Image (tube, rainbow, N blue to C red; front, side):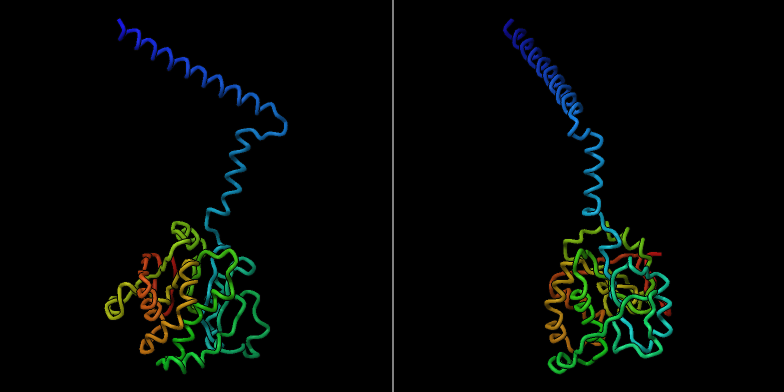
Length: 267
């Protein structure tokens, strides 16, 4: 008998609570929907979603491109870059070894703005590095970080004959956490090259991608890395070795391709 009374009381309490909760929810919705200065539930959800989208989703404005070139090669390679570059939309620079010659001026509005690579004479003297050209290429990763920081999530380094498919890059990079140390690259199409250098190395012809925190760390440490490895004659190898020293390994992406003559991305 006591057991039956206990069960009945429990059932009655649960029923009462459920009814009370339903009435309370109804009253809240009714009161808020009749207030002229309050948003309806649908409007609230839409506005919240729209306002959070730019902050949460990677878009083209979060990408910065650093293109390594020279005044000599730019004459016949700029068409590669201009095929995907979008003036006033894409962000970044082409880094030249010296000021453009007269035949390159006025500078094409369809090309990225140019920068002159830093003078690395002192760095070369201190490190006694075997390759001045390679030092300029590696050092460009530091220079692009200094030139563009506001609102950046990803730095993408490429050669002056690298072709990027920008929408695909945005789509792929939106799947990665840009707040972490991330180094993205692709293997060489030549198996022997991967065996000679490393399967943990991204080949720069296909583009190397660094998250903002990783690029910041590279900026602080790259000159020390060049001093530790003055005998490495390839920029890709130097960057990989430097990043490995800090415990960062390659995130290989199969959509990055380095092939002979033309390098391209995310086909």
